[in-house]
Length: 55
View 1 (cartoon, rainbow, N blue to C red):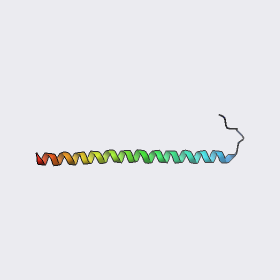
View 2: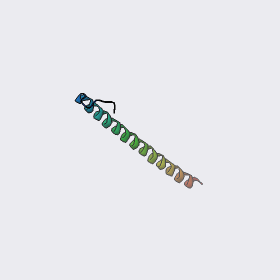
View 3: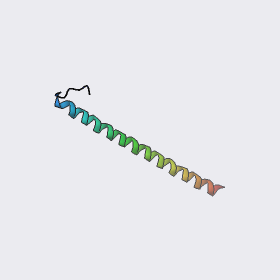
View 4: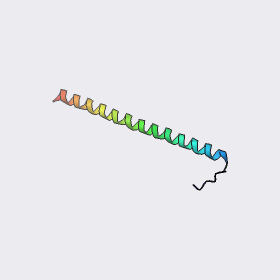
């Protein structure tokens, strides 16, 4: 690693905060993708039902 072992302690805290922020953002992105998938599946099911009624 390029970072010095006796470097400032605040660097470590900053990186931890950045990592936590990244994981939170990833979790939000995954949740949003999951919601979008379930929503599209729901609307697809509704469309199929409506078409079955029609035809």
